[in-house]
Image 1 (cartoon, one colour):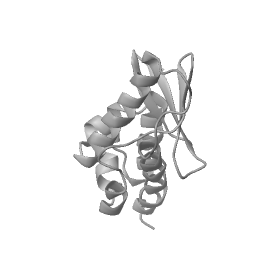
Image 2 (cartoon, rainbow, N blue to C red):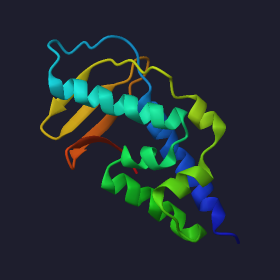
Image 3 (cartoon, rainbow, N blue to C red):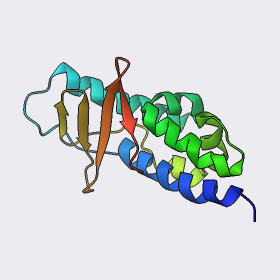
Image 4 (spheres, rainbow, N blue to C red):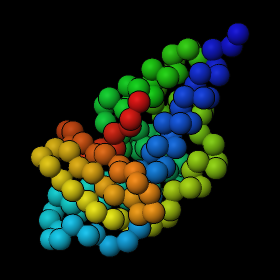
Length: 141
């Protein structure tokens, strides 16, 4: 049995969760907007830009350390690989086409080094964590 199917089945689900994280719509509804909320929005936009450009290295840079490790671990049954290479191998065109060119946002809440972004039209929130001075998307295993 080939070790490649686990990457093909597990990673697309992780990528889909990131696509959802990059989608949104509407104006902020959280009252006053502060610099932290603007930084969170900028991080999601940078992620969306990287996805649209299929810049796999930048997509990985947009993720938390733990998320990158999760992606790399998903590649181990197929012989391993770095984050960018693993995403490139598993990425489908349909997944990348779901990310809007200009993401908009619902409610953004920031509590310390963790932020949640409300996705319009969905009950899902994207979670971002501030690591190494940068807001990064966190995958849910």
